[in-house]
Length: 213
Image 1 (tube, rainbow, N blue to C red):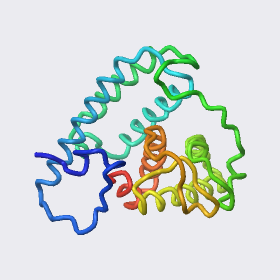
Image 2 (tube, one colour; image 1 turned 180 degrees about the vertical axis):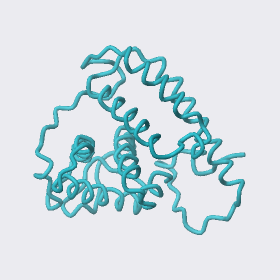
Image 3 (cartoon, one colour; image 1 turned 60 degrees about the horizontal axis):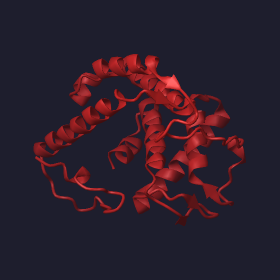
Image 4 (cartoon, one colour; image 1 turned 135 degrees about the vertical axis):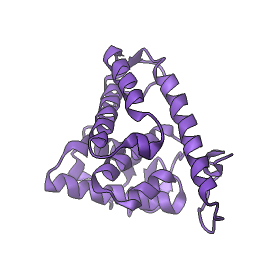
C-alpha cells in the first residue's frame, strides 16, 4: 500500500488535490501507514540528538505541551492508531536531557527577530520566516489583539499555500506574489506547528485540511 500524496516531494512535484479518485477504506489504511512510518523515523532521529539551540528547545517544549493538552480532551491513541503518549513520554525524557547552545550544527539557528508583531503590514514586503517566528511566539498570547493577529496572518499564509502549494521566502506588498526560495524545511515546520496548534483549539476543518496537504 502506498499513500501517493507523500510518496514524493510535494513541494517540488505539486499536487492540486482536484478530481482525485475515490479510494474507499484503503485510502485511510494507506494514510495511517505512511504517518506511522514517518513518526517512527522522526522519533528515532530525535532520540539521537544530544544538543539543541535554546530556540529549538523552546519549540520542542511547546510541541510536547500541545500533545499533553490535546490528550486531556481526546483519546489521541485511538485517533492516530499510534501509542502517542508513550512516544511523547520518551520525547519528554529526551527533552530533559538536552544540552542547550546557540551554535549547534545542523539545527534551527537562534533567531534575532524582535519586531513588534502588530507592526507587520501586508502593504509592505513580508519576510516569511519573520512572520512564522512571530506567529510561533504569539501562540500563548490569548489577548484579543493577539488572536486577531494570529487569525489574520495564519489565514493569509493558508490561502497562499492553498493556491501555490508552496511557501516562498518573501511576499511582495499585497501578500500575493511570493519570491525567493520555496523549499526551506524550516518554513513548513513552523507553518505546520502554528496550524496544528490552532487546529487543536479551534476544531476547524480548514486547518486540518491544510495539515493533511
